[in-house]
Length: 634
Image 1 (cartoon, rainbow, N blue to C red):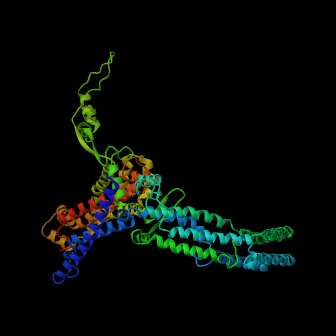
Image 2: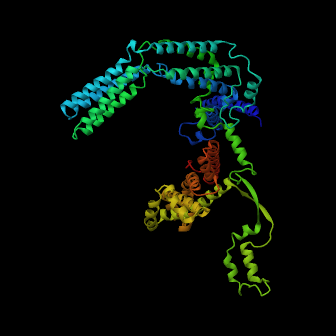
Image 3: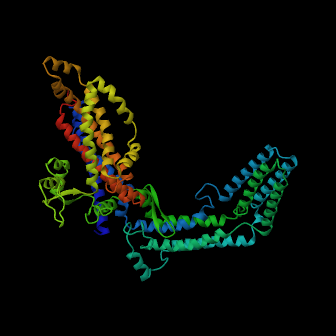
């Protein structure tokens, strides 16, 4: 399917979901008005139905996903990302220069520098005064701090700027104005060459290739910003080389630094540690002053004004891109790197539904799968192997006689004992049947196996504990001892004992389901109304009949609710177990995708887990409706 077709489908789905959301809200409010007199608050029937609110919830979630993943933006504005990439190149090249002026911050960089370093010098003075070093040494350090302070402030004087630097700054301002004029020129940079057009239109589309966003401009506006970015890169490089330094100033810094080292060397053994700290603090300030980033207050005004004019023109030329960025691409930005442009924020970590669906379709292909294993498919297996699973091998040992041995000529004569053994082990020719297989099937079977064992063993024990003082006293400490322990704490131990086979995972899931089912069944049994039990006794019911006809039906709501809870906990535990030790399953897929930073695969596994959990929950709701229709109506 072409990228253009995917965009059309995504756009149509977005509009359809938006319409469905609006309709369902209007319809739901209309229905609610007709129920005001029919159903009072608290009536359980009032919560039934409401399929239109399901549409509201599903549409809202999908709309948020399409919106914050930028999939809707990619569908409606396919060229916007490429153009924003070119704008990001300009911003990336100018960021260093802009940071010098109160554009990205409130203060001029030199003002912030003076304020910060001045406070550090004052703090160092207080440290010197509070120290218990020799009085003479203390006074000399205070003089050194004053010298550092004078060096710092000397750079703000108008006469500190050399004629060469004045000319360089004026030249920078002129060059920025020239670039601004190019940006405003409708004809700049001229018609694209055949090679440029070919490179722009032949590159993959947004999200179609290995690069997140194609960086070769494919529109006139994109070409303009791309050419401007090359020009401002050269200007930024020239501006970064300008330093408010001269030979005399460098010599003063060097002399002050040597004086500090001499002071530290002349300190006594008792004062050495404190002198080292003071010297280090002042020397760090000197090194930062030596960068020459402080200019007289009016020295950079011409460059700042030129940058402001450039920024205004850039904003004007961006035009609708600002609106698209603010409305259609929330929670992030497009950033230019050294070799490519990337999405940042929610557009990066939240994969696009179309990409996720394409990934799901790809790994669902049985010929592709994931790590050579299909997601969900079937394989032909002999019926003999499946039958042998239910027949124990030791049946052959019960047949009289001995197993045959080979003769001197190498032949083996079979007997009845051999034939029974072959039948029990499935070692004979039979027809084959299609059996489900794949990552999904393996995970489902592990959950169902552990859940089944937990129900079969946990429910009877829970009922027994709810009816017997001995059973409650004997088993309750054992259950409550391991129940609060998180399943992940058991996982390493169990998987170490059982290995990476399914036995360990199923046993871990059994432990999770068993505790939940015991508590649920015990709660259901102890919650049975005593009047019902007395009535059954009065009617001559036996203990077995009371359990089957009274206690078990009254316990069913708790038991079935426990099964719903156990399914969810088992899914979470299974994924963790498969991530720790496994070669198949949803957790295995997610673990491999995590190591490879494959966000689409990770989100596919999350969605599959959610859908499977929802499917199981819907099945349990149906079972609850059919088995205990009286719930909430007694």
